[in-house]
Image (cartoon, rainbow, N blue to C red; front, top):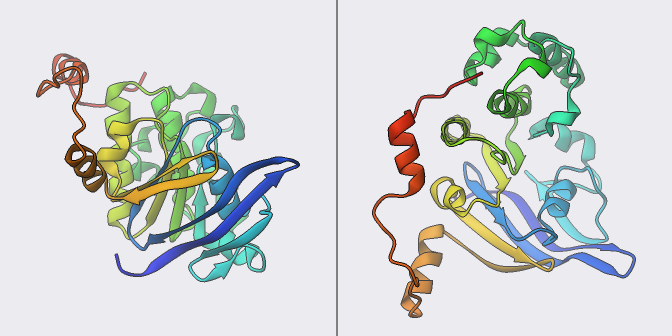
Length: 253
């Protein structure tokens, strides 16, 4: 991970008198899982949408694999994958039909069954999107991001609302995508998720980057500063109890 695939320099986004993104700069390296973390309204989604060429910036520079979001939008769209929310899919279409629709937009030939197999949905080829469970819908949304074999995929809170089994399954899917050479940039409100998945995280608030480092380094720095939890942390959590009792395997309704 020594080659920059995303470069953000002095990025600013204003809406009238509101500055949503306030001069942030950071890099993401090839093959990395990078997490952009922050509270609601911090500027995470706006930053992602600018990188995805879905929103114009006010000033600054954003490069995706050396391509400018100002001048090379069409080329960038060919090398990235963007996760849609569930509302972005036709509910009455079968999954193979939806994949063929996306493939047509990218002008690529695909085998829907093979792509669905990558996300453990190969038995749902002839299922309608509206018939899927919440976890299946999230896996399918990620499935659509890899149709064009992208260099970078963007995932905006990919596990929100999922049960523990579905969440763990999606983590493994994200790792598998990274292992195939794709860079992953994600946002999440789950700090345990970021700690487990991300090689590095950037924490943003009020449109400004507060810090960027590996999760381990950030935790070690906080402890070195004398931080202590008020409640002693046990070696297991309630989620561990839940998974131990119900099993780790994915259950699709």
